[in-house]
Length: 318
Image 1 (cartoon, rainbow, N blue to C red):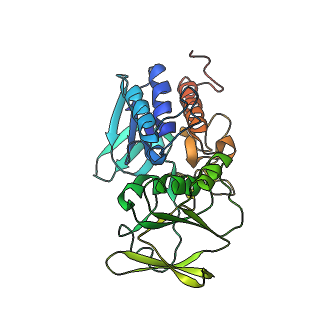
Image 2 (image 1 turned 45 degrees about the horizontal axis):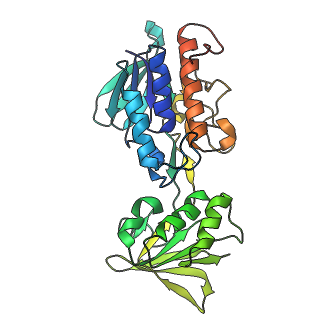
Image 3 (image 1 turned 90 degrees about the vertical axis):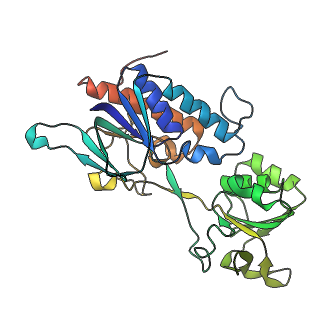
C-alpha cells in the first residue's frame, strides 16, 4: 500500500509527488496524459526563473524531477474509480481501480485531475471533431500552415491560441461573443500586432460545415455581408470545467462553481482525500502553473501531517 496516490500527471501532480517523496512517503503518481494541460501552453512567460519556456519542456522537467526519487512509482493509466477500503474490517485507505482492471491501494489520495475542455454544442462540432475541429490551437496550429482557421473564445487560451496560429496560418479569424476580451493584456497586444488576425466580435458560430473535413462555419450574424465563413480548421477555446468525476462518488463537496472544495491545507471534507491544481476551489480559481505548483506542495505537506496523526502543516523543507 502506498502512503499516497496522486491522480494526474500535470504541474500540481508532479509538485505533490516531489514534496511527498522528500517526506519519504511512498507515492504513486498516475494519469492518462503526461504533462496534463501544461503541454498545451506554447509559451510560458510567467514561471519564475524562466523568462520564456515552452509548456511541454517545462512539464518534462517537472516529470524528470518527480521520477528522480526512488519513493515515486509512475503509471500511465486511466483511473476509473476511487473506493474507500472496508473500515468495518479495520482497513484504512483507498483502492484505485484502473480501466485495465488493475487496482492499487493508498492510505491517502491527492486528486489533481485538472480540467476538461468545454464544447460549444453546435451542429457539426462532434461530426468534424478530428477532421478540422480541435480544442487546442497551440497543439494543432502546425497542421494548418497556409490555411484559414477560426479560433472561438475570448479568454487566455483563445487569444494565445490565435497569436500562435497566426505564425503559420494564412488568416486567423478570432470569434468572440462579447465586445471585449477577458485575456491577459500581454496576449491581446500580441494579437493586435498580427496583421493576419481578423477580429469578429459580438458574434458566434452556430454550425460547422464540411464534407470529409471542415469547409466553413456559420455565424450568428453576418460578417462582411455573409453568415458563411470559409475556413479549413476550427479551434474551440472557450474554457474548461473541473474534472471532478472521481471526487463526487466519494461524497466530496463541490463549491458553487463545481470545483472540488478544499480548505487552506488542500483537504476535502472526506478524511484522507486532498485536492490540488485546476480541479480545486483553491487559489481563487486562478489557474496558473505557479498556483498549481503551490497547491501541490501544500497538499503533500498536509498528507504528511495527516499520516503523522496531527493537523496543521509539517514545517519547512527548504
